[in-house]
Length: 87
Figure 1 (tube, rainbow, N blue to C red):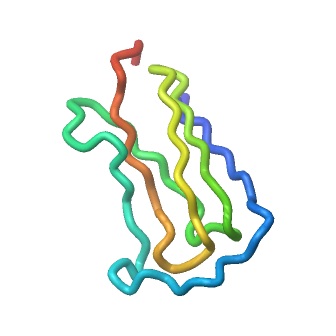
Figure 2 (figure 1 turned 135 degrees about the horizontal axis):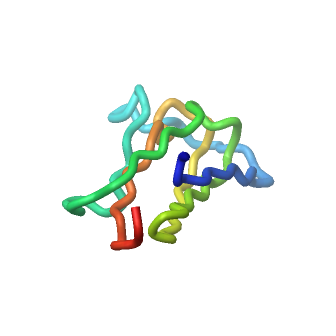
């Protein structure tokens, strides 16, 4: 069973800025670099619009939120460090 619950929350605006040219193919956001254990959440890329992804691990109960704009530099995935819950 997939332990990650991923939800999209759209925002009420449209991005007026350009994508970051340093990440033309999106990026992996590492929320807890160096964590001994982690999960990788794959996200819809690019995001449907401006908004936020909420990622909740059912096993360790960690929750993170990352934002996106619907541009090429949106996150493709998020690496979340385990906070020691049952896995």
